Length: 166
Image (tube, rainbow, N blue to C red; front, top):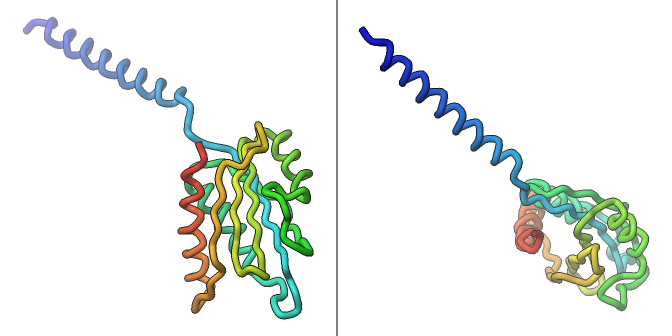
């Protein structure tokens, strides 16, 4: 029996292993599509009729969960409470948190404004490179039978915003 076929088989297996190794190596070296996002939730229009509740926390958790589940790197700033809704697209009260996100290497800064007087939530996505607004979405505050149902609705709304991260 000749040793030639055995040698050819071993050489073929070695070539296959090298090809598989190269493919895995190329995949491991290719950049992944993870964006870095900093999230800030602001409350405005709070009164005795609509005291602070868990609604801003539901939005913050929904934003963090959806972005993280989408493969992005996410951080958050402490929630802010404002007396009235910001007059400009970029709230001046968010400047310090924006600067921290920029210096921390974040690519995006998302401000979620929970406005009790208008009964809506405004999501504003900014680029930290230019501080220009990339996209804004508004959602009407609705009430659900339970917190889980409300949270799932928030996550569904946030998935639309996640599409704007590159």
